Image 1 (cartoon, rainbow, N blue to C red):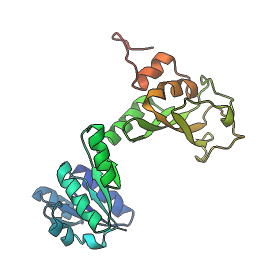
Image 2: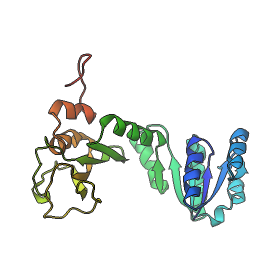
Image 3: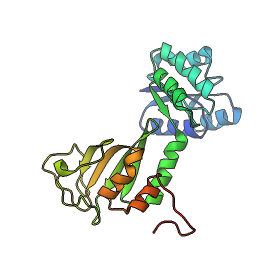
Image 4: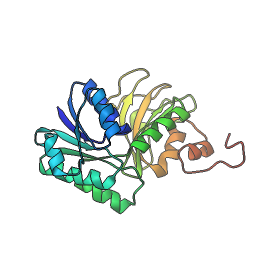
Length: 239
């Protein structure tokens, strides 16, 4: 596939490397001269110019691109580029860095194919490292939903339950199930939950604490703190 990426900074260049390593054709657009030189030194085709201008996008051969990633730190430039690319029939990916108000978020979400938050993705990785192996955040969906992978422990109240017996809060649903070291797949009705099994759950942030208590066996206080719905008191936190 052929991709045009606007911005050869940290996010744009890393994305370009991954796409190239997978065999895709990537053209970068960048107007900062040191970044242009760095990308060209790595062997990338780089158009020196403003990616929010149609002439520059045409120079990058947007007509034959499958998708455009507007990955600069300038939201206005990113959005303008996406609107031009959409006119050319490209899939559009818009980078947003700040926590915009819900109505602003939805405005942009309605106009492009995909929104990405590099800082949020980095935060998810850090959160996973801090939490350890029983709970892994996979993605934030919208602003109030999260997809998490949880590993059943000895302390989980649902240890030994079958999938149909599992009663999660109303604002959550099981997306996938995997036995210990097995592949994730759609959950079957005769599957029983054992230590080491994994469940992928889509849940509202408001019920993450309850889900952690059920599937991992955390205490109510610890689950509330880890899910971001409570706070620890004193210098020692919650034990």
